[in-house]
Length: 410
Length: 169
Image 1 (cartoon, each protein chain N blue to C red):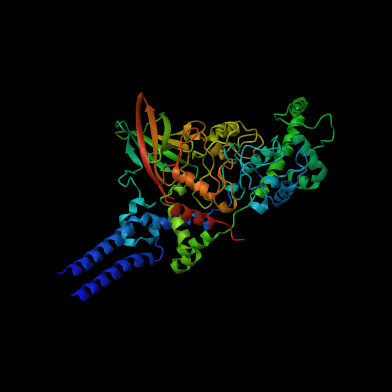
Image 2: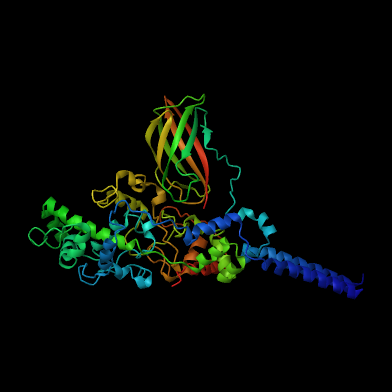
């Protein structure tokens, strides 16, 4: 009798073990809807580079070549030491790895990555600029970034890039008369520079600003070419789309796949990090903590007003766009609590190489970011869009493992 | 049944229960990846594909709340893709089918499940005549259930209509 029961026990235990291991041995099963989401995140789904109607030189290779030189030229700063590449270092995915960018001074925000921003209607964490060229002109005259003025810069163009400039943009005006074109001179907060600027004739100011704008358009033509590379995640999706589950499962580990499943599911990540660049280019309050001693930061609430008032926006005289091409600006949300301390989600491609995280480098690791999302603390201002996730430590680590698969294969 | 047999039976049953229950309880930790496809069907509520409001009326033609107008829309984008700025043509008729011209129309909306509004401020920019109105500046940047609401005032009558959309992604 005992023997019979022992056999029965054995059978039952084998069965239950079979249930456990049988289930786990299933090839990764994605529903049709999940496959659709995977495809939408796949780099192959990225549409062709959209033209920037506000920049007629955007796809001009000569403009891009000039823009690339300007991007790396430290002479375009008040101390001769700061270029765009100082904070947007190509060796570091076009960012600097610092919580707050260091130009001639220290900014209040984290330097953003550049790859794929040609697809975004809004630049900066708060979207206060609506094109890459308008964005490029901001730091050049920021007192804590490049710290110089447009009058100084257009003279540098004349001294160092005259032929290249004229080949793209036509004749460069003569800025050599120091009484008409004093240095420093720009519509900036520095009193001496602002006073010099005001003393110039409207015609001279316009001549300087036109050349300054063309510098921005050249830099943007270069920045448009900066794109993220294919990642292991993309190779995985390619195999899934080809119905090659066996190959797919050799590309990502079980943890990475589990993290991906959480990313597009229970962790709600794709609410904001969607599309092939893993960003919806909108603005979200995720309750990111305030950093003490920094001035009040209202995020998009101020950024929207600044975009409307920007002298270089899509509807400005310096834009090459027709008003009907400016629908993002014309139909921009300009008020409401949703804008308070709302920031643009950066692309998550190469995110693992881009610590620290958030708009002022609030979190030093992805673990810190994921814990914050999991706990969904109240926002210091406005309302957080986060909801408590109740994910385990194991699950959070799986999501991090997945995020690491988004790194470009060099 | 002697006591030894009983012990074996009980041990077996308890072991099986503990194993199966433990597996089910630990499922959130393993992640749905280890779920059998049959089981994942029952768990579909948690899958991103499911529409929580599956019984939504997503028709593009609706009567306003108080029945004053019959309203329909045609999107420039069909299907509506995530994050694309686009426009709609809204058609407004009286309940008995006469086109309503010269109406004042306000646009609002959002994602009821997430408690947030539209990411843009769409507006009616043109009265195209024959009860047609151009709505510009629509964009949906998240996948899921969206509401687009129109407040319509014409000839002293004000009424509201809400369209439900399921945007993919």
